[in-house]
Image 1 (cartoon, helix red, strand yellow):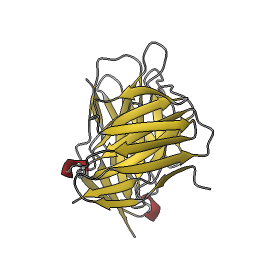
Image 2 (tube, rainbow over the protein chains, first blue to last red):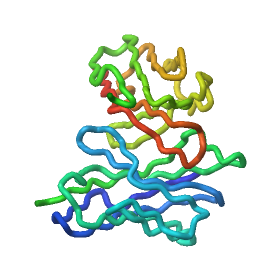
Image 3 (cartoon, helix red, strand yellow):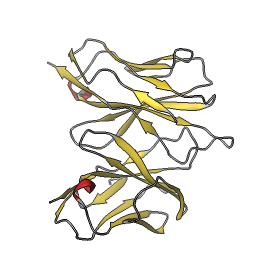
Image 4 (cartoon, each protein chain N blue to C red):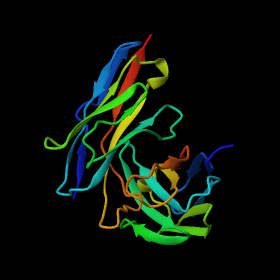
Length: 119
Length: 114
């Protein structure tokens, strides 16, 4: 069974500064995907960034980037130039890819980290 | 236009009642899901459907019965509601069932069982 652990229940950052959210996972799978989803107060989950385990290069989406350390099973999210709209709960998620490359949407989520961006 | 819409957004009901939550997506996706978020914000998949066929049932009590009349709709019916069913239920969809697929979530239905 896979597990995803987010060890920081809450984080805060000043607007325009940089913050890093931690995530570790445990799996015996070789092929898998990792995701960060954001849940703002509106409650809707929104994909922030995703990473395929086979790709060495860390994923980047505008101000969001990851530090993927496969051997350490670590997948942290860095948010640069933090904005007030980044205030949300952030979830790290894992899904293995079976032989056909499918997962049927079965994501395993971490406990979440509440991020507050202060003006 | 909301991509994945759920109704109702809030549902308050008594123990023992039967209730339904409706979900519709206008993205043309083939795959739809139900996820449950408990009071500690823990999210867990309940069901996964592809082209109206059930693919995953994550040992959910059989009081929960999903129904997909067509690819764009996945409804959730819950019989004999219990206190422990109180949670936020999210519908989601994706283009296919590849492991890297982006899931599009609805805004959730907060169910409170009294």
